[in-house]
Structure formats: C-alpha cells, structure tokens
Length: 237
Image 1 (cartoon, rainbow, N blue to C red):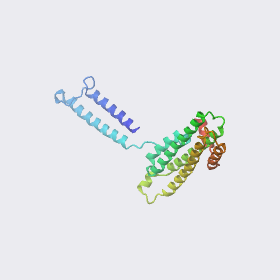
Image 2 (image 1 turned 90 degrees about the vertical axis):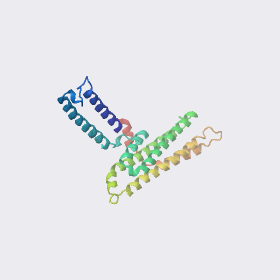
Image 3 (image 1 turned 30 degrees about the vertical axis):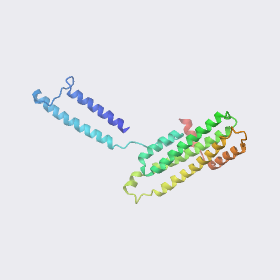
Image 4 (image 1 turned 180 degrees about the vertical axis):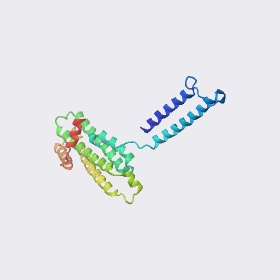
C-alpha cells in the first residue's frame, strides 16, 4: 500500500513538473534571457515543488499503515492468515508465535483438502459424512483459537513494550498465546491420525473401527468449544 502511494504521488509530481516546464504548459525556464518575471517565477515554483516533493515522500514513508484486522470477519482460514500477516507489522515482538500460527493454519487447510480428496477418490463422501462434520468442528476450533490469539495481539501495546521492555509484561501474553498454539497442535495431530485411518479405506482388510476411534479421539480434543460467533459471521458475510 505504501509503495502504491509513493508511486502515485511521485507520478503526479512528475506530471506537474512536465506541465510547468513544457512549452505547452507554463513554459517556465531558468534562462534569464526569457525575462525576469519568468525566471523569478521558475525559481519560486521550483522551490515550492521541491518542498512538496520532499514533504510528501517523507510523510508517506513514515506513515503508519492501519493494520488492525477486522476481528468480526475472521471466519475462514484465509481471513485468519491475512489478519496474522497484518499483525506481523504491529506486533513484531510476537513474530515467532505469529509464524507458528500461520503454519498451523496452512496445515489445517492441507488436512481439510486431503480429507476431501480421499473421500471423493473413494466415492464414500455420503457414507462417511460424520467425518466431514468432525472436520468442520476441528476447523472452527482452530479458527476460534487463532481469533483469540489475534485479540491478545491487538490488546498488547507493542510500541510501548519496545520503548520500555522492563516495565511491560510480555511474558503473560506469550504464555497465553503459546498455550493456544499447543491446543491447536493437539488438534492437528489427531486430525492427521484420522486422515491416515481414512487413507486405508481402499484396503481389502479395512478396519472401520480404527477410523471411528481416530474420529472419536479428535472429537475428544475439540469437545466443549463454543463456535456460535463463527457461524454468525459466516451468515452475515
């Protein structure tokens, strides 16, 4: 966004300069032979143009881009990843945790894609519909946790922390976020185990009880989480 602003501003300034010095424009010139009035006007406008050019570029470069994610819109993996990438700018002190959260979202998406592909490949989507239901809840669980992480990042004043690290409590924030990341890690582990069990659907000696036990294990991890807010967000989008 900042690069776009710089390009647009400098493009406009270049256009103004061309119009001022071209024969079809104002026809300004630094040659004294063109008259004292034109020469004085050229000097004055040039100083004014340079001042605006420097001030404009400086203002754009130091301008802090608004990067507060729209928390109410975080209902998909893509929404969360976009918000976390914005948080990298506002909360660089949590860059390690943010990167881990992004990787967890990527893993979640890969697991979802793998499950859908396996069910479609073996033409058992309807027979194993309960797997989709479990996967949906797992998705909501991880997304809800990521939303909690982003809420905490917004609450933390990173600039104040960088100005005085000794008086700012960052340890409690990191402990909270890392705790949530551990929860997600457990979900993704059980999710992977369930997919591995599903991958054996095509085997002649398939053990359906194994798939059910892996699904039950994932359900046990994600049990008790309230996802009503996520459902409401999807309906309003």
